[in-house]
Amino acid sequence: MARNNKALKESRIHHSQELVDAAYTLTRDQKRILWLFLADIEDSEKVGVKVNAEMGTLEFNLQAYESIYNVSPHEASRDVREALSGFKDREVKLYLPEESSNTEMATDELPWLGKKSYRPKRGSYTVYFNPYLIPFLGNIKESVAPRFKTLEQLSNPLHVRMYTKLIESDALKQCELEVSWMIERYELPKTYSRYSNFKQKFLSPCIEKIRKLEGMGNLEYKELKNNPERKRAVSTIVFTW
Image: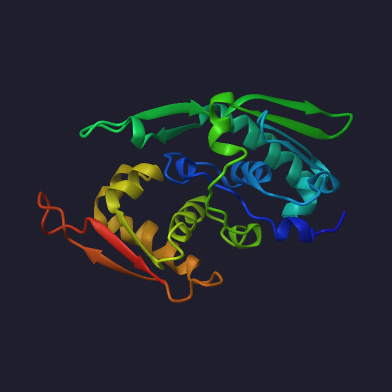
């Protein structure tokens, strides 16, 4: 198996609109497992990854994980084991605009997984995503689809989420987001409601990393104070690139 499989590196990671805008946090290794399911890998079984989008299942072997993410056998075993174990404490909150009222947003809060299996004789894992999540994960008609080789340059999962949200508007090269929206959807610490903390610990490092990606070298942002209830506070960020 090639250490850096070309088919995988050129694949795209398909995110539904609901997933892009959802509230959740995942670790680096949990993201890596999710990407294996979301990626449109050509002849994926040849690289040790088997996906059934309709059933919401992902089967992969540790050798494939080692090769894809360029880690040692020990690291692969440890990372996958800890990532899958940690999923039991993780939920994703989906926002459903079509079901929302004028004053309240409709939401569904769901665990990521329904089941996980390990087969030591084959050295393989099978992940069964929550059946209620499948419409937002598999066989998506319209999606935000960054390239795998681009996403893997971002080691911080929060930076991945920010980049994915930005390229949703890549045709316009502009994206306007409320600070409160980013804090809520990316599940940032409550202390980030203080803008100086938000900027220093999230926004500035995030922009610095994303600028290094192809097509994002001109990324800039403008701070707006357009909240009538907090006229002196930055409430909205306009990104351009």
